Length: 174
Image (cartoon, rainbow, N blue to C red; front, side, top):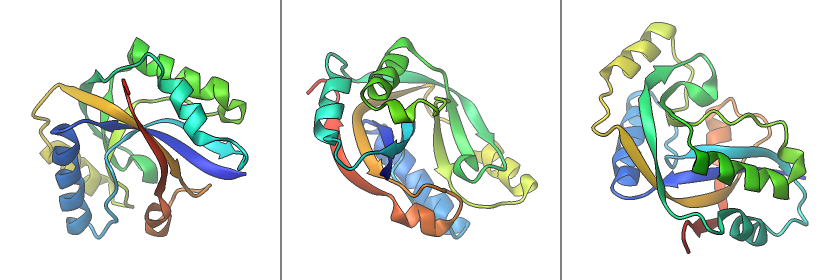
């Protein structure tokens, strides 16, 4: 089984704006940049699973949508060093549930919608300073794409971030 994460990706111009912010933070704090995203589901997926079919079924009837940004927060967890916390929505829950139904091995993943801005081990004061310095220009973030991403089982180092690779992408409303 391979470890796969299913990501909800912002539409433009949000995607570029967050990508620029992620790149600046990565350069400042010696981290690896990554695609801005919200993880919908993550876990082991049998290699025999047709990801194209799973994603086509999961996004059927769902077009692009927005999520409300609650604020910028930080934590000692590597995958949530500094992040934008998002408010859940019915559409987000429906999309995550449809992926989970197609892949029962993902049942242990707990959806907590957030968009990470940096993956790095930082001191608490530095994390808080980064979070405090970020001002969100919009309260709503639009999303229009879902990706299946190969990811390491453990996600705790820069080497793990460098291993992330897109296996398949699907536009919402396509």
